[in-house]
Amino acid sequence: MKNPKVFLSLIFNILMLSLVGAAFAAPPISFGVSGPKTKVGNFGNGGDAFSSGHHSISIFGENIFTTWGRSGSNGHDVVVARNGANGADFFIGSDIVGSEPGAQSALAVDSDGYIHVAWHTGNQLKYARSNSPGGQTYTTPILLSGTEGAGWGPSITTYKDAGNNMNIYVAYTSDHISGSSNEIYIKTSSDGGSTWGNPIWVNDWTLAYWGVPLELDEYSNEWGDKFPSIAVDLNGDLHMTFSWAGAPMYTSSTNGGVDWDEPIIVIGSVGYGANSYPSIATVNGTDIYVSWETGGKIYCASSHDSGGPSSWGEPVPVDPGTGGYHYTSAAVNSNGDVYVAARIDQQIKLYKSKDGGGSWSTPYIAGDGTDPHLAIDNNGKAIVMWADTNNKTVFFTREQ
Image (cartoon, rainbow, N blue to C red; front, side, top):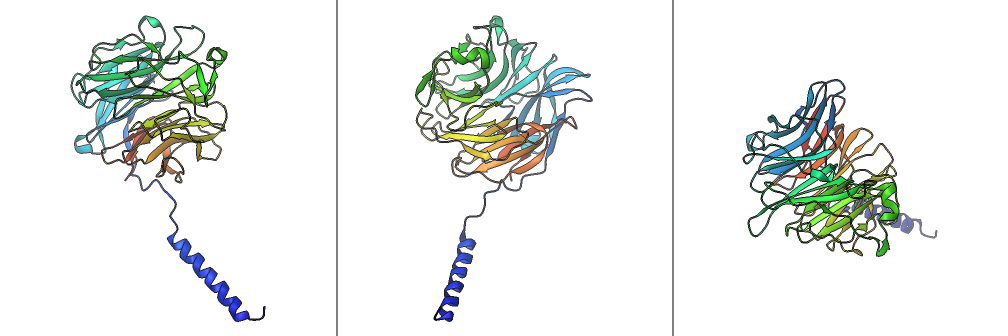
Protein backbone atom coordinates (compact mmCIF):
# COMPACT_ATOMS: atom_id res chain seq x y z
CA MET A 1 0.00 0.00 0.00
CA LYS A 2 1.59 3.25 -1.19
CA ASN A 3 -0.60 5.49 0.93
CA PRO A 4 -1.40 3.98 4.34
CA LYS A 5 -3.46 7.06 5.35
CA VAL A 6 -5.88 6.44 2.48
CA PHE A 7 -6.14 2.78 3.47
CA LEU A 8 -6.86 3.62 7.15
CA SER A 9 -9.43 6.22 6.10
CA LEU A 10 -11.17 3.64 3.91
CA ILE A 11 -11.32 1.12 6.76
CA PHE A 12 -12.65 3.82 9.12
CA ASN A 13 -15.43 4.75 6.67
CA ILE A 14 -16.43 1.10 6.22
CA LEU A 15 -16.67 0.62 9.97
CA MET A 16 -18.75 3.75 10.41
CA LEU A 17 -21.15 2.70 7.67
CA SER A 18 -21.52 -0.71 9.33
CA LEU A 19 -22.33 0.91 12.66
CA VAL A 20 -24.87 3.25 11.09
CA GLY A 21 -26.49 0.36 9.24
CA ALA A 22 -26.74 -1.66 12.44
CA ALA A 23 -28.29 1.28 14.25
CA PHE A 24 -31.06 1.59 11.67
CA ALA A 25 -31.57 -2.15 11.07
CA ALA A 26 -35.01 -3.49 12.00
CA PRO A 27 -35.01 -4.88 15.55
CA PRO A 28 -35.89 -8.53 16.06
CA ILE A 29 -39.58 -9.21 16.48
CA SER A 30 -40.57 -10.19 19.99
CA PHE A 31 -43.89 -11.24 21.43
CA GLY A 32 -43.80 -8.32 23.81
CA VAL A 33 -44.09 -8.11 27.55
CA SER A 34 -47.04 -10.28 28.45
CA GLY A 35 -49.09 -9.85 31.57
CA PRO A 36 -48.45 -12.12 34.53
CA LYS A 37 -50.13 -15.48 34.33
CA THR A 38 -53.48 -15.54 36.06
CA LYS A 39 -55.05 -18.57 37.69
CA VAL A 40 -58.31 -19.62 36.03
CA GLY A 41 -59.14 -22.63 38.22
CA ASN A 42 -58.16 -26.11 39.34
CA PHE A 43 -59.01 -29.38 37.68
CA GLY A 44 -58.49 -31.86 40.49
CA ASN A 45 -56.01 -33.61 42.71
CA GLY A 46 -53.62 -36.51 42.42
CA GLY A 47 -54.31 -38.45 39.25
CA ASP A 48 -57.15 -36.24 38.07
CA ALA A 49 -57.01 -35.43 34.36
CA PHE A 50 -57.40 -32.29 32.25
CA SER A 51 -58.74 -32.34 28.72
CA SER A 52 -59.65 -29.64 26.23
CA GLY A 53 -60.43 -29.48 22.53
CA HIS A 54 -59.89 -26.95 19.77
CA HIS A 55 -61.18 -23.42 20.39
CA SER A 56 -61.38 -23.79 24.15
CA ILE A 57 -61.20 -20.02 24.71
CA SER A 58 -63.48 -17.29 23.36
CA ILE A 59 -63.84 -13.52 23.77
CA PHE A 60 -67.07 -11.56 24.12
CA GLY A 61 -66.76 -7.85 24.80
CA GLU A 62 -64.27 -7.48 27.63
CA ASN A 63 -64.91 -10.97 28.95
CA ILE A 64 -62.93 -14.17 28.49
CA PHE A 65 -64.62 -17.57 28.49
CA THR A 66 -62.81 -20.90 28.58
CA THR A 67 -63.63 -24.56 29.09
CA TRP A 68 -62.06 -27.85 30.08
CA GLY A 69 -63.05 -31.34 31.16
CA ARG A 70 -62.19 -32.74 34.59
CA SER A 71 -62.07 -36.41 35.52
CA GLY A 72 -60.71 -38.31 38.49
CA SER A 73 -61.24 -38.89 42.17
CA ASN A 74 -63.57 -35.92 42.60
CA GLY A 75 -65.93 -36.96 39.82
CA HIS A 76 -66.33 -35.95 36.22
CA ASP A 77 -67.65 -32.81 34.65
CA VAL A 78 -67.22 -30.14 32.00
CA VAL A 79 -66.34 -26.69 33.29
CA VAL A 80 -66.86 -23.24 31.80
CA ALA A 81 -65.04 -20.38 33.50
CA ARG A 82 -65.22 -16.66 32.79
CA ASN A 83 -63.48 -13.57 34.08
CA GLY A 84 -64.93 -10.77 36.15
CA ALA A 85 -66.64 -7.57 35.10
CA ASN A 86 -64.80 -5.09 32.89
CA GLY A 87 -62.27 -7.70 31.83
CA ALA A 88 -60.58 -7.92 35.21
CA ASP A 89 -57.96 -10.64 35.31
CA PHE A 90 -59.68 -12.91 37.78
CA PHE A 91 -62.32 -15.54 37.37
CA ILE A 92 -65.51 -15.48 39.38
CA GLY A 93 -66.26 -19.17 39.29
CA SER A 94 -66.87 -22.24 37.21
CA ASP A 95 -70.02 -23.38 35.47
CA ILE A 96 -70.72 -27.10 35.36
CA VAL A 97 -72.08 -27.93 31.93
CA GLY A 98 -72.42 -31.67 32.44
CA SER A 99 -71.90 -33.85 35.51
CA GLU A 100 -70.55 -36.81 33.57
CA PRO A 101 -67.15 -37.82 32.20
CA GLY A 102 -66.10 -34.97 29.92
CA ALA A 103 -63.11 -34.60 27.62
CA GLN A 104 -61.91 -32.51 24.69
CA SER A 105 -64.41 -29.74 25.45
CA ALA A 106 -64.57 -26.84 22.99
CA LEU A 107 -66.32 -23.49 23.35
CA ALA A 108 -67.52 -20.52 21.31
CA VAL A 109 -69.41 -17.40 22.37
CA ASP A 110 -71.71 -16.04 19.68
CA SER A 111 -72.21 -12.36 18.83
CA ASP A 112 -75.25 -12.21 21.15
CA GLY A 113 -73.21 -13.52 24.10
CA TYR A 114 -74.60 -17.06 24.29
CA ILE A 115 -72.02 -19.71 25.21
CA HIS A 116 -71.90 -22.90 23.13
CA VAL A 117 -69.98 -25.94 24.41
CA ALA A 118 -69.32 -29.32 22.77
CA TRP A 119 -67.46 -32.19 24.38
CA HIS A 120 -66.69 -35.90 24.12
CA THR A 121 -68.19 -38.23 26.70
CA GLY A 122 -68.66 -41.98 26.71
CA ASN A 123 -67.41 -42.16 23.10
CA GLN A 124 -70.12 -39.74 22.03
CA LEU A 125 -70.35 -36.02 21.29
CA LYS A 126 -72.58 -33.76 23.40
CA TYR A 127 -73.59 -30.11 23.26
CA ALA A 128 -75.10 -27.49 25.58
CA ARG A 129 -75.81 -23.75 25.38
CA SER A 130 -76.09 -21.15 28.09
CA ASN A 131 -79.66 -20.17 28.96
CA SER A 132 -78.81 -16.47 28.73
CA PRO A 133 -75.99 -14.30 27.36
CA GLY A 134 -72.92 -14.91 29.50
CA GLY A 135 -75.10 -17.07 31.72
CA GLN A 136 -74.09 -19.54 34.39
CA THR A 137 -76.78 -22.14 33.68
CA TYR A 138 -77.07 -24.33 30.61
CA THR A 139 -79.58 -26.25 28.56
CA THR A 140 -79.83 -29.98 29.11
CA PRO A 141 -76.95 -31.56 27.15
CA ILE A 142 -78.00 -33.18 23.88
CA LEU A 143 -76.32 -35.91 21.88
CA LEU A 144 -74.82 -34.43 18.70
CA SER A 145 -73.37 -37.66 17.33
CA GLY A 146 -76.81 -39.31 17.66
CA THR A 147 -77.29 -42.75 16.20
CA GLU A 148 -74.32 -42.29 13.87
CA GLY A 149 -71.97 -43.60 16.53
CA ALA A 150 -68.88 -42.17 18.15
CA GLY A 151 -67.85 -38.54 18.09
CA TRP A 152 -64.76 -36.87 19.51
CA GLY A 153 -62.28 -34.00 19.11
CA PRO A 154 -64.82 -31.19 18.51
CA SER A 155 -64.08 -27.73 17.15
CA ILE A 156 -66.84 -25.10 17.27
CA THR A 157 -67.53 -21.68 15.75
CA THR A 158 -70.52 -19.36 15.24
CA TYR A 159 -71.78 -16.82 12.69
CA LYS A 160 -74.87 -14.58 12.49
CA ASP A 161 -75.92 -14.27 8.85
CA ALA A 162 -77.65 -11.44 6.99
CA GLY A 163 -81.04 -12.94 7.85
CA ASN A 164 -80.23 -12.63 11.56
CA ASN A 165 -79.93 -16.42 11.92
CA MET A 166 -77.37 -17.58 14.48
CA ASN A 167 -75.45 -20.43 12.86
CA ILE A 168 -73.50 -22.87 15.03
CA TYR A 169 -70.93 -25.20 13.44
CA VAL A 170 -69.38 -28.19 15.20
CA ALA A 171 -66.70 -30.22 13.39
CA TYR A 172 -65.66 -33.54 14.88
CA THR A 173 -64.17 -36.96 14.19
CA SER A 174 -66.24 -40.13 13.87
CA ASP A 175 -66.10 -43.58 12.29
CA HIS A 176 -69.74 -44.42 11.69
CA ILE A 177 -69.68 -44.68 7.87
CA SER A 178 -66.64 -46.86 7.17
CA GLY A 179 -66.46 -48.41 10.63
CA SER A 180 -62.73 -48.90 10.19
CA SER A 181 -61.27 -45.42 9.86
CA ASN A 182 -61.77 -41.90 11.16
CA GLU A 183 -63.73 -39.37 9.15
CA ILE A 184 -64.42 -35.68 9.60
CA TYR A 185 -68.02 -34.53 10.06
CA ILE A 186 -69.80 -31.27 10.71
CA LYS A 187 -73.18 -30.63 12.29
CA THR A 188 -74.88 -27.28 11.89
CA SER A 189 -77.66 -25.37 13.59
CA SER A 190 -79.28 -22.25 12.10
CA ASP A 191 -81.32 -21.34 15.20
CA GLY A 192 -78.65 -20.82 17.85
CA GLY A 193 -78.30 -24.46 18.82
CA SER A 194 -81.97 -25.32 19.41
CA THR A 195 -82.17 -27.80 16.53
CA TRP A 196 -79.51 -29.53 14.46
CA GLY A 197 -79.27 -30.92 10.95
CA ASN A 198 -77.94 -34.30 9.91
CA PRO A 199 -74.17 -34.83 10.00
CA ILE A 200 -72.29 -33.91 6.85
CA TRP A 201 -69.31 -36.05 5.87
CA VAL A 202 -66.69 -33.39 5.10
CA ASN A 203 -63.95 -35.57 3.62
CA ASP A 204 -66.04 -37.55 1.14
CA TRP A 205 -63.93 -36.68 -1.88
CA THR A 206 -60.71 -37.33 -3.78
CA LEU A 207 -57.74 -35.60 -2.19
CA ALA A 208 -55.52 -33.17 -4.09
CA TYR A 209 -51.84 -32.62 -3.44
CA TRP A 210 -50.68 -29.54 -5.31
CA GLY A 211 -53.30 -30.37 -7.93
CA VAL A 212 -52.46 -34.10 -8.16
CA PRO A 213 -55.45 -36.28 -7.10
CA LEU A 214 -54.92 -38.90 -4.41
CA GLU A 215 -57.61 -41.42 -3.54
CA LEU A 216 -58.69 -41.17 0.08
CA ASP A 217 -59.36 -44.88 0.47
CA GLU A 218 -55.73 -45.73 -0.29
CA TYR A 219 -54.67 -44.27 3.04
CA SER A 220 -57.76 -43.78 5.18
CA ASN A 221 -57.94 -47.23 6.75
CA GLU A 222 -54.33 -46.97 7.92
CA TRP A 223 -54.18 -43.31 8.88
CA GLY A 224 -57.70 -42.00 9.21
CA ASP A 225 -58.62 -38.36 9.59
CA LYS A 226 -58.74 -36.53 12.90
CA PHE A 227 -58.26 -33.33 14.89
CA PRO A 228 -60.45 -30.90 12.87
CA SER A 229 -60.03 -27.18 13.49
CA ILE A 230 -62.71 -24.88 12.03
CA ALA A 231 -62.88 -21.11 11.53
CA VAL A 232 -65.44 -18.76 9.99
CA ASP A 233 -64.50 -15.55 8.20
CA LEU A 234 -66.27 -12.18 8.08
CA ASN A 235 -68.35 -13.31 5.08
CA GLY A 236 -69.57 -16.48 6.78
CA ASP A 237 -67.41 -18.85 4.73
CA LEU A 238 -66.02 -21.84 6.64
CA HIS A 239 -62.38 -22.92 6.67
CA MET A 240 -61.08 -26.18 8.12
CA THR A 241 -57.86 -28.03 8.69
CA PHE A 242 -57.42 -31.60 9.94
CA SER A 243 -54.75 -34.24 10.11
CA TRP A 244 -54.62 -36.90 7.41
CA ALA A 245 -51.86 -39.46 6.82
CA GLY A 246 -49.52 -37.44 9.01
CA ALA A 247 -50.16 -34.17 7.16
CA PRO A 248 -52.38 -31.12 7.73
CA MET A 249 -55.17 -30.66 5.17
CA TYR A 250 -57.16 -27.55 4.22
CA THR A 251 -60.70 -27.35 2.87
CA SER A 252 -63.45 -24.72 2.78
CA SER A 253 -67.19 -24.28 2.33
CA THR A 254 -69.08 -21.27 0.99
CA ASN A 255 -72.60 -22.55 1.69
CA GLY A 256 -72.66 -23.12 5.42
CA GLY A 257 -70.92 -26.48 5.46
CA VAL A 258 -73.25 -28.25 3.01
CA ASP A 259 -70.53 -28.72 0.37
CA TRP A 260 -66.75 -28.72 0.81
CA ASP A 261 -63.95 -28.13 -1.66
CA GLU A 262 -61.43 -30.82 -2.44
CA PRO A 263 -58.84 -30.67 0.34
CA ILE A 264 -55.30 -29.48 -0.16
CA ILE A 265 -52.25 -30.90 1.58
CA VAL A 266 -50.32 -27.84 2.76
CA ILE A 267 -47.01 -29.46 3.79
CA GLY A 268 -45.01 -28.31 0.75
CA SER A 269 -41.57 -29.91 0.89
CA VAL A 270 -41.76 -30.49 4.66
CA GLY A 271 -43.10 -33.99 4.09
CA TYR A 272 -45.32 -36.32 6.05
CA GLY A 273 -44.83 -37.10 9.70
CA ALA A 274 -46.73 -37.63 12.90
CA ASN A 275 -48.61 -34.48 13.82
CA SER A 276 -51.31 -33.61 16.32
CA TYR A 277 -53.99 -30.96 16.34
CA PRO A 278 -53.28 -28.71 13.36
CA SER A 279 -54.85 -25.29 13.92
CA ILE A 280 -56.40 -22.79 11.48
CA ALA A 281 -56.87 -19.03 11.69
CA THR A 282 -58.37 -16.39 9.41
CA VAL A 283 -60.31 -13.14 9.68
CA ASN A 284 -60.98 -11.96 6.15
CA GLY A 285 -61.02 -15.33 4.39
CA THR A 286 -58.26 -14.19 2.04
CA ASP A 287 -55.31 -14.68 4.39
CA ILE A 288 -55.44 -18.14 5.94
CA TYR A 289 -52.92 -19.74 8.30
CA VAL A 290 -52.41 -23.35 9.36
CA SER A 291 -49.96 -24.32 12.11
CA TRP A 292 -48.83 -27.81 13.04
CA GLU A 293 -45.99 -29.88 14.41
CA THR A 294 -44.06 -32.55 12.59
CA GLY A 295 -40.66 -34.12 13.08
CA GLY A 296 -40.07 -32.14 16.27
CA LYS A 297 -40.56 -28.78 14.53
CA ILE A 298 -43.39 -26.25 14.37
CA TYR A 299 -44.50 -24.96 10.97
CA CYS A 300 -47.01 -22.47 9.65
CA ALA A 301 -48.33 -22.51 6.09
CA SER A 302 -50.18 -19.52 4.68
CA SER A 303 -52.39 -18.70 1.73
CA HIS A 304 -53.00 -15.10 0.71
CA ASP A 305 -55.48 -15.94 -2.02
CA SER A 306 -58.46 -17.49 -0.20
CA GLY A 307 -56.93 -20.94 0.14
CA GLY A 308 -56.79 -21.82 -3.56
CA PRO A 309 -54.81 -24.94 -4.54
CA SER A 310 -51.86 -22.97 -5.94
CA SER A 311 -51.91 -20.21 -3.31
CA TRP A 312 -50.19 -22.03 -0.46
CA GLY A 313 -46.57 -21.06 -0.02
CA GLU A 314 -43.77 -23.17 1.37
CA PRO A 315 -44.38 -23.70 5.12
CA VAL A 316 -42.19 -21.51 7.35
CA PRO A 317 -40.59 -22.93 10.52
CA VAL A 318 -42.05 -21.11 13.52
CA ASP A 319 -39.49 -22.79 15.76
CA PRO A 320 -36.85 -24.76 13.84
CA GLY A 321 -35.43 -26.52 16.91
CA THR A 322 -36.22 -29.98 18.16
CA GLY A 323 -38.11 -30.70 21.32
CA GLY A 324 -41.18 -32.22 22.89
CA TYR A 325 -43.70 -30.53 20.63
CA HIS A 326 -47.26 -31.77 20.62
CA TYR A 327 -49.94 -29.13 20.31
CA THR A 328 -50.21 -25.83 18.42
CA SER A 329 -52.84 -23.10 18.35
CA ALA A 330 -53.02 -20.33 15.73
CA ALA A 331 -54.75 -16.94 15.74
CA VAL A 332 -54.70 -13.76 13.65
CA ASN A 333 -55.97 -10.27 14.38
CA SER A 334 -57.60 -7.73 12.05
CA ASN A 335 -54.23 -6.01 11.52
CA GLY A 336 -52.77 -9.21 10.07
CA ASP A 337 -50.55 -10.07 13.05
CA VAL A 338 -50.33 -13.87 13.26
CA TYR A 339 -49.77 -15.80 16.49
CA VAL A 340 -48.85 -19.39 17.24
CA ALA A 341 -48.74 -20.99 20.68
CA ALA A 342 -47.16 -24.38 21.26
CA ARG A 343 -46.04 -26.75 23.96
CA ILE A 344 -42.30 -27.23 23.68
CA ASP A 345 -40.35 -29.28 26.22
CA GLN A 346 -43.24 -28.94 28.69
CA GLN A 347 -43.31 -25.15 28.30
CA ILE A 348 -45.93 -22.94 26.67
CA LYS A 349 -44.26 -20.69 24.11
CA LEU A 350 -45.81 -17.88 22.08
CA TYR A 351 -44.67 -16.62 18.67
CA LYS A 352 -45.75 -13.66 16.56
CA SER A 353 -45.41 -12.76 12.89
CA LYS A 354 -45.96 -9.25 11.53
CA ASP A 355 -45.38 -10.13 7.87
CA GLY A 356 -48.11 -12.65 7.15
CA GLY A 357 -46.25 -15.68 8.46
CA GLY A 358 -43.05 -15.00 6.54
CA SER A 359 -40.89 -14.71 9.68
CA TRP A 360 -41.44 -15.32 13.36
CA SER A 361 -40.40 -13.76 16.63
CA THR A 362 -38.31 -15.30 19.32
CA PRO A 363 -40.62 -17.08 21.76
CA TYR A 364 -42.22 -15.65 24.86
CA ILE A 365 -42.38 -18.35 27.54
CA ALA A 366 -45.73 -18.16 29.35
CA GLY A 367 -45.10 -20.99 31.81
CA ASP A 368 -44.95 -24.75 32.22
CA GLY A 369 -47.85 -26.80 30.95
CA THR A 370 -49.73 -28.24 28.01
CA ASP A 371 -52.72 -27.66 25.69
CA PRO A 372 -52.33 -23.97 24.78
CA HIS A 373 -55.33 -22.15 23.30
CA LEU A 374 -55.17 -18.72 21.63
CA ALA A 375 -57.77 -16.00 21.19
CA ILE A 376 -57.67 -12.35 20.10
CA ASP A 377 -59.23 -9.67 22.32
CA ASN A 378 -61.03 -6.51 21.18
CA ASN A 379 -57.74 -4.62 21.12
CA GLY A 380 -56.15 -7.10 18.73
CA LYS A 381 -53.95 -8.59 21.48
CA ALA A 382 -53.36 -12.30 22.00
CA ILE A 383 -54.64 -14.20 25.02
CA VAL A 384 -53.46 -17.75 25.72
CA MET A 385 -54.86 -20.35 28.13
CA TRP A 386 -53.07 -23.54 29.14
CA ALA A 387 -52.99 -26.25 31.81
CA ASP A 388 -50.20 -26.77 34.32
CA THR A 389 -50.61 -30.49 34.86
CA ASN A 390 -48.04 -30.62 37.66
CA ASN A 391 -50.06 -28.19 39.78
CA LYS A 392 -53.49 -29.18 38.42
CA THR A 393 -54.13 -25.54 37.55
CA VAL A 394 -55.40 -23.69 34.46
CA PHE A 395 -53.76 -20.34 33.67
CA PHE A 396 -54.06 -17.58 31.11
CA THR A 397 -51.96 -14.58 30.15
CA ARG A 398 -52.46 -11.71 27.72
CA GLU A 399 -50.24 -9.73 25.41
CA GLN A 400 -49.61 -6.19 26.64
